[in-house]
Length: 432
Ligand SMILES: [Fe+2]
Ligand SMILES: [Fe+2]
Image (cartoon, rainbow, N blue to C red):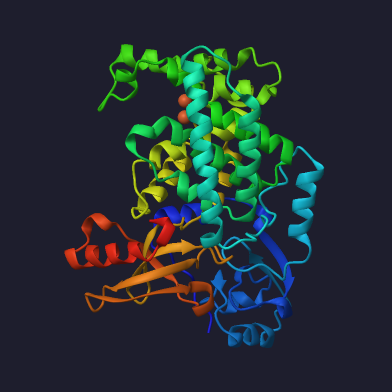
């Protein structure tokens, strides 16, 4: 039996429906597998069976039925379901990145898969994070005192970060999102740089450009060291004068980096223009559309996403989705539309840390990706049906073929549900 897929969240629908023709593939019906999402049945016969339109294939029987109707070819949507067997695509993408084509390869390709499990990479990423904190502290002190920043150190660091992100895209991202309020600018810079690395990896951007953009991201807010701390850390809204002062940080960043002749041009461009917006409403130059360079376009997305979601801790994944919605809404006015859509796809419909409820009313938190965007790995801890805690267990939804019914907002949880979630957090080890 074929069952139409439904997601209750409007945002999830928006993300899934982002127009991307490369996600639609024509395949032979015999290549259909459970877990593929049929976008179009490519046959008038399907019209006779009005109960099917777009559908997720959930059983072998469904494939047999299509065959019995004489449907020999279908169009599948690889964004919403499984792809046909991977050939050598991923290896090729990785090789191409090293060999250096500077173009985006288009988000229709499959990004390189993680080669190291999250748990393992977190240990390595933790060491890299500590090194990053040291290097950024030194850079910020040097900038504050008008001394030279050790750019060589920054390059070596970013290369290590790139290797970590290539092995597992989530480890460094998760670690850099855990920060104390007093280390905001420092951890924000490392986090934005990690996001840039992972996004470039996802998008197939070549290695040297990836490193340049990540260096730019690491140093993009270095000019904040010239802003009075009282304004920088002011709780609540800034008044117009304070806002004008804080806007100066982009020019200060560019000034600090200007005499570093060895720095690639993208780094300087990112420092100066990461607050420019597509409609010209940004600063300092009010650049519009393609007058904004590729580097600032990429970094502005990562910068805004990190800033919006940074106050929220690991458990409050719904806010990550809220962050994506802001990028989606701003894709017309503020950001490069294609890059914004690619970025939303990169973060995914259910980012790690997002709380969700399954169709069977079990509640859990997303802890990993399964290769199927809509059926991630989740750790379950509560049954809404029984209104009771359950034994904490991790399941790969793509293996058991259970769908997510909705996002969960922890603010409305009962006390026993919150308590069980806290127990769950203890099972997350280094990800707590
Ligand atoms: Fe900034
Ligand atoms: Fe920033």
